[in-house]
Amino acid sequence: MAKAQALLPSLLALSLPLFGQNLPEKFKDNRAAWEENLAKGVSAPVRKATEAVLAQDGPAVNPSDYNAMHAMVAVMSLAARSCVLEGAWEDAVAHLQKAARTAADNVAAAEGTFGRIRHQHDENLKTWRAEAAKLDQRLADMDTLGGLTSDQIKTRTQIRAQLDEYRNAIASSERSLREIDTLTEQLRKEQEVYAASLAEWQGFLAKEKADVARKGSVEAYVADKLEQVKGDDAKPVPERLAYARRLLQLDPENAGCRRLLNGLMGKDDDPPAPKPKAKAAPRKKRKARARG
Image 1 (cartoon, helix red, strand yellow):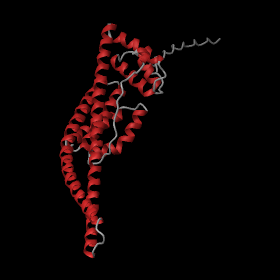
Image 2: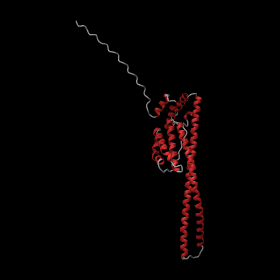
Image 3: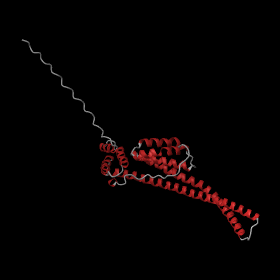
Image 4: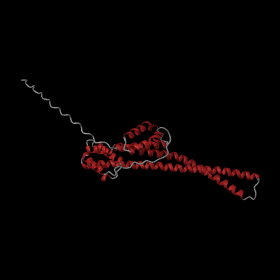
């Protein structure tokens, strides 16, 4: 960590419309509060809540429901971010592994479903465009006639109404295809983001392990990194909190890490243990004066 630059790899998330039951609804209802806590550097309640949602509602998510799967990936991301903030980076990587795998599964399932829907739209579009072309030609032929009988005028009106129906159906299918393409692109992007974030964090932990080995001990590594983190006060507080907690997790006996963490959290340093009160010296008894 060269002067604590780029303290932490990024955790990115995409935003898709969410609806459904249980897990998606819980994510939708709680996302703002979770994000607010993480922005303040408060991680424990977010981790507890997101991991509880994943444990309780995750198994019931339908793999073919791309919205529910997307919501689950988003909750996994928040769980990972809370672990990062706690300094539990191995746990964050475990959540990212699940998020990356779930995002990949979501793309595969969605492409299969969307592929069938796309095929049906394509077949319908071929039929409707061909029929619309025929009706256009019939109207063009009727326009060449000098004068139209009442029956011909009625027929032309019917043709135009039918042509409007085909055109509306064509426009609707084309919109659906565009929506499918947009959703597929978003889901693919989400898969790429989490795969990249996972690789970045795995590399980050591998580098940390190598740096510890070069320093010869965890204590030496923490002492060195602590000075860098203390000196880099331009970084956002949550990022510095994450690193301070990480260093304290690696070396729980490091008093400097504890002081830095307390300072970032706006807490006083741990007060020293009270000294035992000295025992009062026994009072000497006065000798009674002899009376004359």
